Image (cartoon, rainbow over all chains, first blue to last red):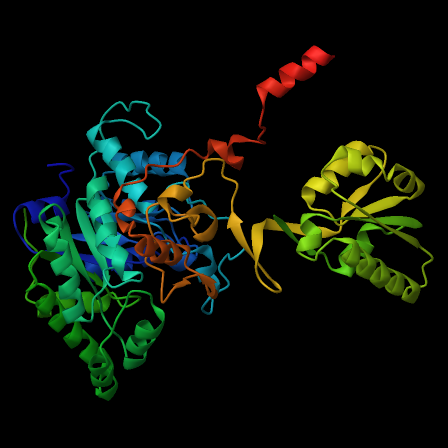
Length: 311
Length: 228
C-alpha cells in the first residue's frame, strides 16, 4: 500500500471504484458542507473536493477535505497549480496528510479569467502562479511519498502517504497529444486518473485503445468521468463550449425530448456508467452532479454499484 | 523587439498637472516600429496634449524630441539642453528608456507616456504579438521553436491543459493555444516524440523570480579595469 487510502484499497482489492464530487460553498458555513456530505455519504469510495473550480473563491479544498476526513468520509483533495507555488503546495500537502488526507488530485486549474465568464465577477485581474504544471506536481507528490524528500531536495521527517491522482481529457484538442499526456502523468507517478466527462462512448473507447496500446491501463487506475446531465440545454452547452467534452447529437435530442429531464439525466448517467465499465482498462467511475449532490445516490444505485465495498 | 502602447492622453495630462513646460521625448527604435512612441507618435501625442490643454485654458509649452535609442546613455546625453529647460519629461520610450532617462537626469521628473507590454513581433500589419517571456533559460529546441512560457496562458511545460479547443485557448477565442501551435509544428518537423519526455519543474531563478537580473561579461569588465 502506498497510502492506505480507502480508494487505493478498493482498487487493490479489484473492485470497481466510485468517486463523486463535492463542491465547497462560497462562504464559511460548515453546515453547508455537512449537508452536502450527508447527501453523499456512502455513495462512493472517496469524494473529490474541488479547489476553487472555475477560479471562483470558495472554501478551501484542504479545509473542506478535513471536514470529510473527520466525519469518516474519505476525501480526494484537489490541488491546482494556479494559486500556489511549490512551497505552498508542499506545505499544504504536509498539513493535509497530517489531518489524514491521503488522496490528492493534481490539476492545472481553470485560468483565473474563468470566474468572470458566467454570472459571477471572479478575479480576472489576479496573478496566476503555475510555478509547476500538473505533471510536475504529480512528480513532486511522488517525491514526498517515495523519497521522503521535498522537490528542492531537503529531507522530510517521514514519507507522506499519498495516493496520487491526475486528470485526463482523452478527447481534448490537440488530440495527437492526449495519449502522450496520459503516459507522462503515469511516468510522473500517477496512481489513478479521473477523466473529463465521457458521453461519446465510441470515441472514448478509441482513446482507451490507444492507452492500452501503451500498456498504461495496467500502470494506472483509470476512472471514467460521468457528469450527470440536468437538461438538454446543458448537454448542448457542454458539447459546444466545454473543451474535451463531446456529446453525441442523439443524446442531446433524447434529453430535450424527455418530459422529466432530470429523471432522464439520471437514466443517461446510469447507462453511461454501465457502458464505460465494459471498456477494458476502465477501473471505475468519477461522478459529478454539479450542485445536484442528491442525484449521486440514485445514479450509483441505478448502476448497481451500491453498497460500496468495505475493505 | 519591445512592444508598447501609448497611454491615454487624459492619464498623461494628469501626470503633468502643474507643469508649464513639458518635453515629449520619443525613441526611434522598438517603440517607433510598433508605432507607440517614435517621432511620428511623439508628434501626434504632443498635438493631442496641446489641443486638450488649450480646451482646459492652460498655457503649457510642449516641446518634442526623438532620440535614436533612449536605452543608451550617449544618445540621451544629446538632449540634455532640452531636458534641463522643461519642468517634466514624458518619455514615450519603453520602461527601459524611461529609467535610463531617470538615471541620467536625476533632478528631473521623467514620466511614462506608454505602457510597455511585451517582447514580440509584428505578426501582420497593425498586429503585434508576444513571443518571449525572457525567462532566462531557453528551451525552444524542445518545442518546435514556439515558446510555451510566453504563449501558453498557464506557461505549462509538459503539454496543453484540458482547456484547448479547436486551436484556441480556454482564456479567449482570440488567443491561439500555444501548445496547439507547438504540436502542429512538431508534427510538421516529425519531432512529436520530443514531447514524450517529462520536463521537470523549471528553475525560475533565471526569470524575474530570482530578483533583478544582470549579465556580466567578465572579459569586457577586466579590460575596462585595466584601462582605468
